[in-house]
Amino acid sequence: MPLTVTPLTLGTSGLGRGTEPGSPEEEQAIATAIDLLTSSHGFVDTSNNYAGGRSEAVLGLAIDRIGAGSAGKVISKVDCEPDTGVFDRDRVLRSFDETTARLGVQRLPLLHLHDPYTVTFDEAMGPQGAVAGLIELRDSGRVDAIGVAAAPVPLMARYVATGVFDAVLIHNRFTLVDQSAATVFADARQRGMVVFNAAPFGSGLLVTGARGSALYNYSPAPADLLAWVERLEGVCAAHAVPLAAVALQYSLRSPLVDSTVVGVARPGRRAQSDELVDTPIPDALWAEVDALGPAPSPIDDSRYA
Picture (tube, rainbow, N blue to C red):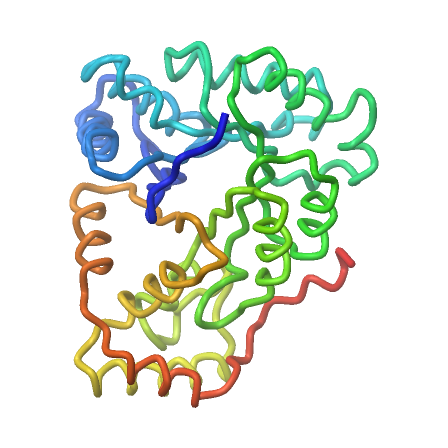
C-alpha cells in the first residue's frame, strides 16, 4: 500500500522520557501526544526503544482518549533486544508485538528496521535475519510498508540497494552542514521509496547557533564548524530570518525529501515547528548560503564503507 506523507513528520524520541504512570508529567506528555495526533501532519514517528518504551506508551494512552481513528497516524521502528543486542527475525516479531501492545493497535502503516548496529548487514539480510521478520510482517498485512532507519551513509546505501524496503530514514546527513545522504536519497527516490530526512537541525546546532556547548550529531560541535555557523547566522540576521527556519526549510525545499522529521517532546513545540515552516525566506538568502561554501562537517562514516 503506498504511503501518503506530509512535508512534516512529528518525531517523539523524547516523548514521555522520565515520566511515571499516573504522574502530572505523564499527563503533560499525553497532552502533547494528543496535539501531535490531532494536527494536520500525516505521521507521528516513534520507536520501540524511545524513552525506554515510554514514547509508545504515552501515544497509546493518547490514542485511547481520542479514539482509534488516530492510530493510523503512528509509525514505529523495531529495535534490538536491549540487554543482549540480539536482532534477528524472532526479535523483530517480539519488538513489533511490544510496540502494538503499548499503542493498543493491531497493525501499523510503516515499520522501520532501526539502528541495526549489533548485527552485520549479512546477518540482518539472512534467512532468519531481522529483515526477514519485517518482510513477514508486511506479507501478513500486519504492516503496510517496511523501511530502514539509521545514520551511516555507506551502510544505508547497502540497505537501500537491496530493493526490499518501501522507505528510508536517515538523520543528521542532509542538513545545511552535511549533505552526505543525498546520493542515498536519490537512489531511494529512483526506486520509488519514500524518503524521510530526520534531524534537520543537526541535533541542536542549527537552532541554538554557534554557542560553545552546541551539539551537532549529538556531539559537541568543533571550533571550525562553530565559525562556519557564525557566518551562516550573519546571513540569516541580514534577512531577519531565524536560523532554525532556514535549517528546516533547507530540507523541506529539497526534491530528494518526501517528509522531514522534527522532534516534538514538549507542549508548544509542534506549533513552533509550524511557524518555522511558514516563515518567508527570500530567494537571495539561499544564494548567500551557497556562497559560504561547504561546511566543515564533523561526521565521518568511513568505518561503515
